[in-house]
Image 1 (cartoon, protein in one colour):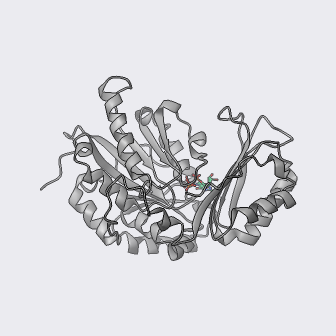
Image 2 (cartoon, rainbow, N blue to C red):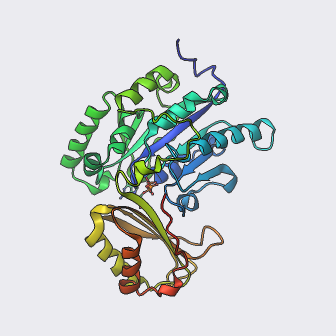
Image 3 (spheres, rainbow, N blue to C red):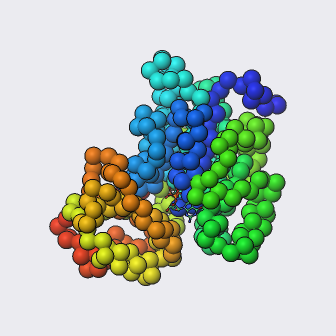
Length: 362
Ligand SMILES: Nc1nc2c(ncn2[C@@H]2O[C@H](COP(=O)(O)OP(=O)(O)OP(=O)(O)O)[C@@H](O)[C@H]2O)c(=O)[nH]1
């Protein structure tokens, strides 16, 4: 069966923006959403941990996005994705929201995109209203090679891509970049590779994705197969078991801290250096929004990806009413308690001000 012609296909394209932890998905998304034609796009952001921060850092209206947190859209919250898409469609059809023209799903960095594509293709009701509008995968030039060696999800994200965006090229040598490009050509032959420095992408990126590949379910299924996906045998709303895929099997977990007193930045920065030096390899992702004692109304946003800690960015104001420091960790084989102890000892954080004692494992 030939693919429907996208020129006369009235279904709403669903673009999947994927890429390993910290590879620059949100940075690219922010850039894309500045494009006038995407101003009304519906954005679905999936976060691995229970305390999401990405949605606070997206420059989009609150009505525009839906947060699916505390699980991975490729497994534990797959059913939520289906429900969200149906609800977006219902609201748009009922005139409660403007007509839906584009959906963008930002996956977690640990997502296997294959089950997401399967989910979209397997739901007959969804397929009458939505079509897969392509997969864009960000690849971090600094950590890409190490990540590929350690995490099979990263290879799958690359294998199913319609476009590869290589990020952070400003931080690597041409030689290292050449090596990575070569590797990517091997994993995703004939897929265009574009440099996306600090999220800079061509504004028509989503519209430029190869329409035939995006719309042709058979081709997507073949790419999914080539990427080594095997179905878990559960329906899209399965909620059991698969979190082990991220947790027990790979020892990867997420936990968070909320601190309700301003922190002393000098001590806090020393603590970050300490954690990066000691645990960098297993610190897959660290994100934080921090209330510092010297400038409590202008929070600092922190990003760490394995050994790399990006320079902190000071926001002009708090993005929401919650003005507490929030720290999210995605780690391999590191206990929350270990980090909690170092926070108290090295960052001079009062243990009593850590108000989120519950483990927020995904
Ligand atoms: N130097 C440099 N930093 C970049 C570039 N692209 C992204 N970053 C930084 O990388 C960090 C992580 O970027 P994000 O966009 O949050 O990455 P992500 O893939 O959305 O992260 P997760 O959602 O946690 O998986 C941030 O500090 C960005 O500013 C780039 O091209 N160059």
